[in-house]
Image (cartoon, rainbow, N blue to C red; front, side):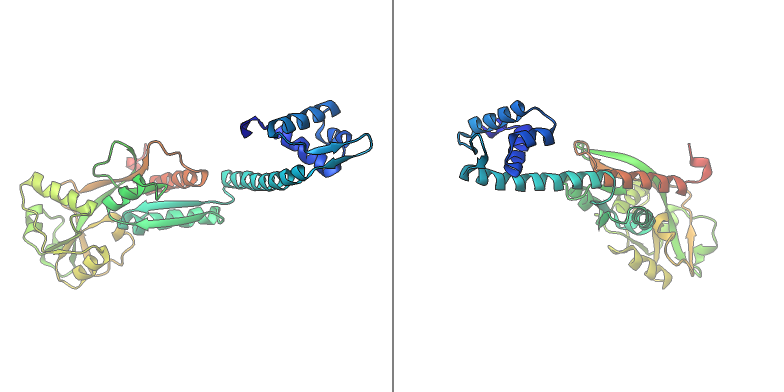
Length: 307
């Protein structure tokens, strides 16, 4: 017969009788009648097709088959109890881990404060962060390598859900001594006339810039590309060129010597949010981290933008 016919009650009765050597004492410990204990042992023996105990009027002795079963069941019970304890600890955020994917700017400009607050509150939860460009981040979500991702929205697969958290705006960064630095704002045409440095085509920022320039009828032709925003920012500081920098990064960069100019004839706003697969439920720890991210995102919004 299939082992599916074994019940937890059968195994509890078996372990108790094996431990006490008494059906009567086992009945008292389990809080059931002695005939019920006997019935459970008989059912177990019938399912397994072996005798587990030798019974006489004076004693109950476990058989060789019973000893083999006892060793397996005790290990199973110990492992099951340990697993139940783990689940309880995870549900109470006493252990576990969260794996996050994020774009580089989000990883540098938004998540550190969130992760810091999370680990101060739940120090026993490990947080693992992978920062990649937009496409690689979504691939990690699709392959279930991360619990969720925090990234700019461009386009998503139908299997993914996107929850907006905050808006982030690109502005033009120029050295303080640049001719444009004295302007209150700058146009895309003026930017096109400069030595523009940007992230590469595989970044989400590239899609934002290309779309804005195309809408304005201005050619988008960067003269320099780097995968590292810090590289672009450092080159701007040295007067090598100009760069479109997002607000998340400029909030953590040392902005001395650099002027930020709004772009007046284009909407260079991008949405930052949580991306996850629709069919995968979040763990308690991942859900708690998402809740904390929502709060931090709300705190970053201007008062006029809050609901």
